[in-house]
Length: 216
Image 1 (spheres, rainbow, N blue to C red):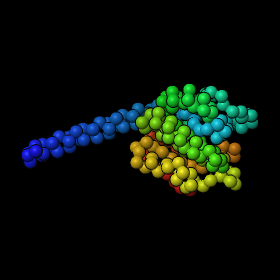
Image 2: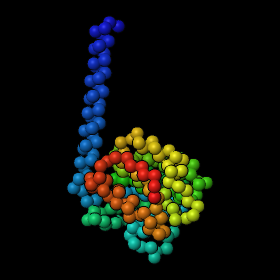
Image 3: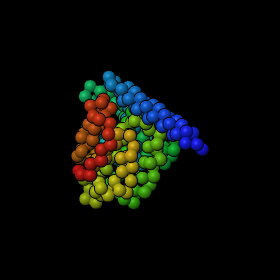
């Protein structure tokens, strides 16, 4: 290959790369702008069975007096917050429901919240595999909130330990908005602050950046 042919090839590759980067930036801008002015959003709540998804929803709806039972299939809850309307897809965590339901609801959701029982390390490997498999079905720029539930229990694991176990630092190399927080659906500790982050990202009040805060 001559010098001129080599130089031509380099310039062609550079032009292709710049075109691809421009398209990516354009797509990201369009997706971000598409949420501006909206007042209706959908949120998918994921996690293994007994992780506390339904308890979290009841806490947000201030329905703590209602007896929480395992979710078989999906519960749809409408929630109004800050003049915005949310439809929460509370998805059953048993394996048959993961296989039959999760994908189609994740693909529809504007945001994804994943709960892990921070006091049940025996199931961390299963939960990790489940999380990384299904998060691939989420919209490209849908914010992901990873919640360490049951943090009020004395045997709950530290945020830094779970962050390492689940390899959540991968999100630092991803354009998807991400956050991780410790909460207790039972006491309400951290629940509303976590929800505020999702709302801020969806309505554009917060920059779409990965945020991993290794503290309570």
